[in-house]
Length: 81
Image 1 (spheres, rainbow, N blue to C red):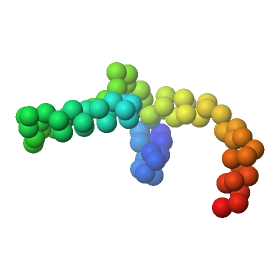
Image 2: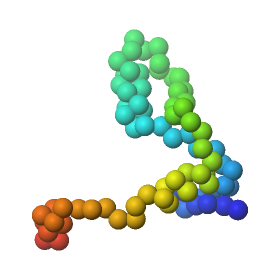
Image 3: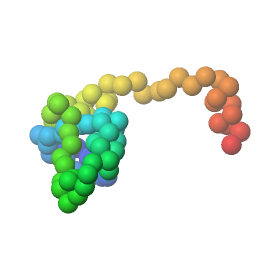
Image 4: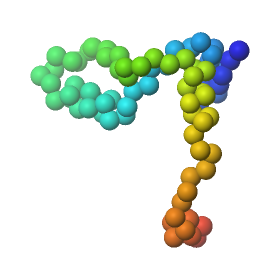
């Protein structure tokens, strides 16, 4: 069985995903840019502490609410554009 990624590429349900927080990635990039040049030409693999299967990630995302409560004034401004 396959699931589809956000790029439309089928992923096996046993495919392993190691999500990482975007702020951590940004911090790693800033640290690499600020160093003495020792990071040049190196590859850094970034991943969060937990490993999930594609099936589990799909189930977790599917459980989130399917709607977002937007305050009326913001919704009205969005409707005007």
